[in-house]
Every structure is written in structure tokens, then in C-alpha cells.
Amino acid sequence: MPLGRFRIGNGATEHPGSSNVRVIAVINQKGGVGKTTTTVNLSAALARRGFRVLVCDMDPQANLTVHLDKRPDLESNTMTNLLVEDAPIQDLVQATNEERLSIVPSDTSLAGVEQVLANRIGRETILREAIEAFEKRNEFDFVFLDCPPSLGVLSANALVAASHVVIPMQAEYLSLQGMAKLMEVIQLVQKRLNPALSVALVLPCMLDSRTNLTTEVLREIEQYFGPQLAKTRIRNNVKLAEAPSFGRTIFEHAPDSNGARDYDAVAQELLEKLGVQTSPAVADKPAPRAQEEPPAAEAAAES
Ligand SMILES: Nc1ncnc2c1ncn2[C@@H]1O[C@H](COP(=O)(O)OP(=O)(O)O)[C@@H](O)[C@H]1O
Ligand SMILES: [Mg+2]
Image (cartoon, rainbow, N blue to C red; front, side, top):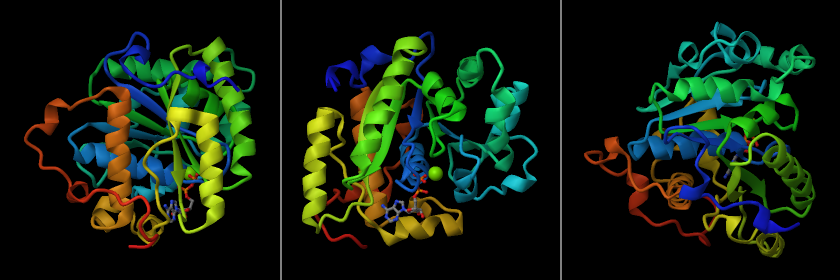
């Protein structure tokens, strides 16, 4: 597959017609690869650097909503209201425990949306239109879309609304097979609906750097993706797996863990990829603790 067709994110790939909001779809049709963990902790890392971040739960399983300590069954306004009833985003946004990090929650009703929208004309552009209307309010610097483990209408809405894609993946042999299908879909969306879409980062998650297989698979992933493969690796870290049950981000749960260090390093790498230097709010904000120690990519897995 010609890699040249996926532009690397930089100033030249701004979301069309928008202000400076970066809309980032965190996508991989495989479940359990680290999408939700990445959405939560990458967003939190950016929020702690002073950026205003909105995360949107696009998965009917609502893991993101629960991870950020929201109770989906009690929420009256969710992503379903946006997609089915055109509810404006400002009516759905809720604060989280993290300063500058907000969420549009979801619940299980989102599972029925694919069917409800099946015959609706323009069903793939609903989220984009909602975000475009919302961007005018200039309330956020980043919007993250946590996608479900499928490539249906919900993921299509995310890809059409996004300026950039982040693809968490595991360094396993079978992961590569799914990548070809995902790239095909991304290319199709670029061609038909969203020419400005670009792959910012392919992010290896839950890495166990002790096995030879991991090294081999990473080499193959690098051949396939070239510079789109992130330099940062998210190591296997038990603190990252614990954090959701406390309804906390890794920076609240274990700020000195490898998980916090790795996700802060991804935030730095993403900002560099997108050509974002700083944000207005960041100047007087002390850097998060996790930033002080450089990520040790090859260090032992647990901390
Ligand atoms: N780096 C990591 N180390 C250990 N556990 C992780 C790591 N990343 C994610 N997990 C755990 O793996 C499971 C799947 O991750 P998740 O982010 O929910 O994947 P997805 O959203 O792609 O389905 C979750 O239980 C999560 O807590
Ligand atoms: Mg998930």
C-alpha cells in the first residue's frame, strides 16, 4: 500500500473551514487494543499541558464514559441525542474531574443508532456538521473521538468529522491483517468525504518489549507505516489497567507510573506532529509531574 497517500499531520492538513480545533479519531476496528485508554490519557495529558479538550464517546459500550466516572444510565443527553435528534454539542458536554477535560458521554442506546440512521441521507456527516457548528464557540483546542470496535456508521461519522487519526494497535502478528482493511476505509473516506483527513500516529500499545516477537512485529509495522509509526511506545502497565475502575485518568491514579510517562510522551509527540507549539492557557501552568522523567522505552513493563 503506498504510504504517500496518507499525509503526515502538520500545518498543511488543517481541518477545512475550521478554526484551530484539531478533531482526532482514535480508531481501530479491533477491540481491546487501547483506544479508550489512549483517548482518556492522551486527552488528560493535553489538558494538563493547558489545552482545552473534549472527548466524545462513540462506542455503545460506553467504556470512555465510565472510565471518566460518568454513569451512562443516568445521563439524559448523550451521543445518541446528537446523532438521532441533531442535539447541539453544547447541550451534551459534561465536565470531568480533570480540569479542562470535558466529555460527551454515551450509553447503550447508541447501539441502535446504526439501524435508526440506516436509510437517512447524509448519515455519515451528522457529527461533522455538529462539530463545525460547535467550533464557532471556540471552547476547545482538541476534540477526541473514541471509536467502537467496528467500521460502521459510528466510525464513519468519526472519520468524516476528524482532521487526524490516531491508531492504537498491539504489536501482534494478527494486528497487521486488520490494518489493511482500516487503511482501505480511511482512503475511501479521504477520497469521497474528507480529503483533509490524515493519519497522525500509529501507536503501539500494551507493549511487552521483552519478547522477540514484539520486536519483529514492530519492524513490520514500521515498514508498513514509515514515519506514521509513533516513536513512543505504550508499555504494558498495570496502573493503566487499574485506573478505569477508579474512574480516574492515569495522572490522577498513578502520576509516577510508566503509564503516565508514556502517555505524556505521546502528547508531546502528537503536538510536534501537528505543529502545535503551545496554547494560550499553558503559559502559567506548571508541567505535569510525569513530564519530568523521560520515557524509558525499553525499560521493564510494570511500574
Ligand atoms: N498499556 C496498557 N497496559 C495494561 N493494560 C492496558 C494498557 N492499555 C489498555 N489496557 C487495558 O486493556 C483493556 C483494553 O483496553 P481499551 O483501551 O479498553 O481498548 P479498546 O478501547 O481498544 O477496546 C482495558 O482493560 C485496559 O484497561
Ligand atoms: Mg474502547
